[in-house]
Image 1 (cartoon, rainbow, N blue to C red):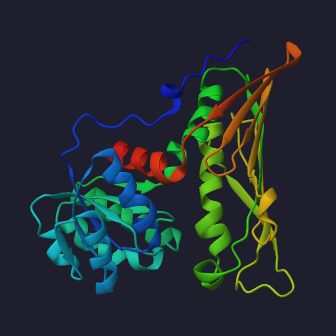
Image 2 (cartoon, rainbow, N blue to C red):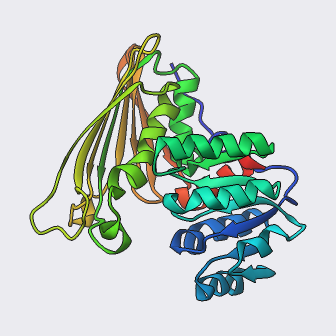
Image 3 (tube, helix red, strand yellow):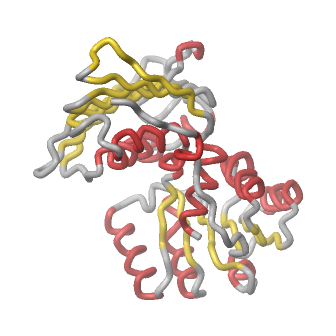
Length: 311
């Protein structure tokens, strides 16, 4: 078995028509430092931005040359060029905004998690379906080249039937917004990796279990260490284990890793920021390991890829 992997295989494919007008609602740090830079680099057409805090909206507009800046979402929705709304507010703020956006006939790319409860999420889906607008949840990690490369190994059958997915994540997030947000770790952060386990396995778990712990002296109001176990039903025969330590204070060893084990081989994705390495081993060649350096990040390729998919 030999893996033929070229950069073009795992880089996001941008749409041929880049003229879709994007309006951004919510101008927080992720929009300012990641999303809009990715959209501009990709050549996307960002025509308006809105935030209830005027200084935030003006800062993003001035930094990236966005023509319309406002604190009133109704003004953004009345802009004739806005076709897609990037809804980048917190989950508990989304439902009333979705009602307005859908009523205006605009398509919605919503940040995750979609809603703070299943009931609200189902209501958002219902609103968009009734209005005839497209709704997409922005799990941009799927388009990050390291994750796309790992998915390709699975798609091409290199590993055979994948039966075990393991993720180990160590970081330091005991400060700022991370520390202030209740249920931040699993609901806002861990959800990326639950979704990636779906992406890699091709299945949605039927049962999700978690265990958490607080750490003495931590600032965060939520547990900083947790483990998630995802269980599946037939025909899936796979187990996913996700472990997080978000209060590891020594950054030199912050190196998130994925292990995928299958009936024909195994894959290891080591993903320090911007320097990912994918290694594949083979059941029929026990001594051989094939490795690839994978260039690309969540911040550019991830966000550019998800918006491109929306278009």
